[in-house]
Length: 63
Image (cartoon, rainbow, N blue to C red; front, side, top):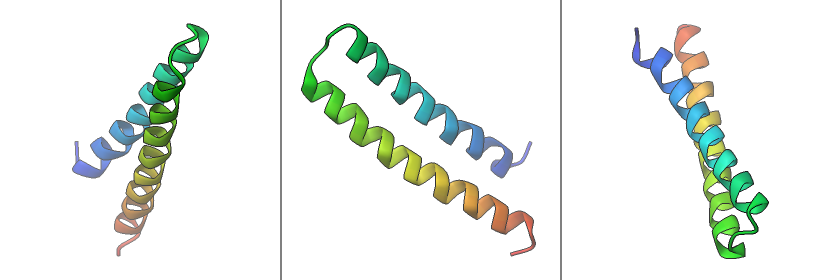
């Protein structure tokens, strides 16, 4: 398995985990500060995931 085949699922999985943690925190009525930090982390991870996906697509097309 190549590095590009590993990075994309890891990036998407990280976004999903943070999203689920945020949803769980909201459903339990957790701290608003925690929800805010998780949302900021999710947005940052989504940006990173998009960068990784675009790079992998560019790499596979022959660069």
